[in-house]
Image 1 (cartoon, each protein chain N blue to C red):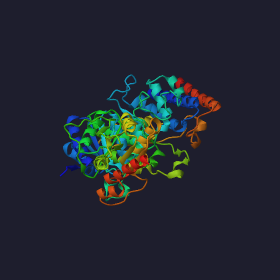
Image 2: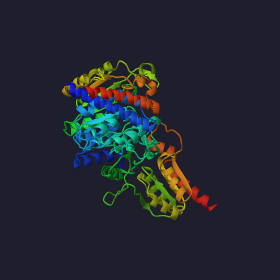
Image 3: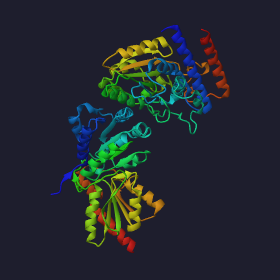
Image 4: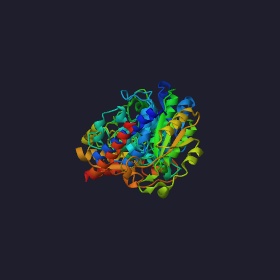
Length: 315
Length: 281
């Protein structure tokens, strides 16, 4: 049976490791430490974990102050509240002064599940991408999540990381895995079309690529953990060599990875693109895995869109 | 306070007020009203209270000052220039392209500015975070934050006040500039924040009310602030918006408007006369 872990677990584990290695790491949470997994850090380093209560705006400001004092704060809440509710605090107190704050936002996307639309943030990439200098990452599995957290610490400047609640397959091999902010990863070599995915959609894209082989379609699967800065060379190369691109993200089709890829290709190398994401609708309650299928965020839907796109180009 | 020291502070405050007028007049925009109401405070902080060194603006053990009411940057800039953080002539570049003196404070551009602010309600959270980290780092430095009375209509300061009390930030001194006016009119007509002292006390602060244009009262309050342990301190200072320039005093219309040439000349004449009187002492 395949091993499944939520990327938020990777976040929590990596924080503890960072805490052991670096005394300047402090963690702020807003009454969600069990859910965001910063409770692991709290248990290991209670004197360096600060609960801010249900006050995300203040938490962002306090973290900015901590960074101004030379510490490296990681701040956590659900994506909806970290990127959404506290957007202006992140923009003005962290982004504008370029303070060294790392935002670990968990419970991103539809796969939050039963809590429903109020808690299913599908707008965070869009919001965070608009802040100059903000690095935006969305790891695809546990291995990548832990690597991204370490890279975020090493990076000087503000970073936004989105993690998921739903356990997802761990497909990266830790021993071989190398991670660099801003660099994508080619997972399968193909040249019929490119599947450019982020977060839990990367595994779905891999499954879709496997299925597409049965139709004689060889897809190049690219995993882009870093949504900003975008790995432009890798995307342009894929577009040049494959001629067709499908973007896959657990985020609104507005403002996320899909639009970032479209903007790049539109200006530099016009290429047919289909965007798979949340189609400008709110989510709803239900088990996370079922919701992903309902909203077309699954391998089957990627296969459908890919087959249609290939057929379209043959017409 | 000794008369000589008070006279020195009053002369510096007069100079700071001139700087506010020079800067906003040159910029043809900016916020003189709230800068003038806090001019005595800026002076007291940078010439009496804060442990800072203009030759080492990034000295890590310095006291921190966060101007949460960031639109009154001209007052802060004038005090910083008077204290020697950068040349006085820079004040006339306020709000111009290429100037380090942005419309609202920028910690990465201006020597002596400890936090970028301007969006009301946010600076106080950063100040509380700084105070918490100072304790974490076992530093004896103190953190000061100035808020406007209109600013506390925002929700975020109250989150920060809760935080400051919860973490027992007795190294944090909050100052509220109660100049009674905001853009749309008197604060109690726009959205009353009153009673301010009772609210701060309910949030766990030790509170001292003073006349924000009286250096003796300031000295007493800031001395008391340093002696209180276990809880954060709040100085609520009653002030006059536009203080020092008679035609600007107590007028909401001078919140965010620069003096024209004639008004500037008139205001400077008043302040120059005041300076001459103080120097004659």
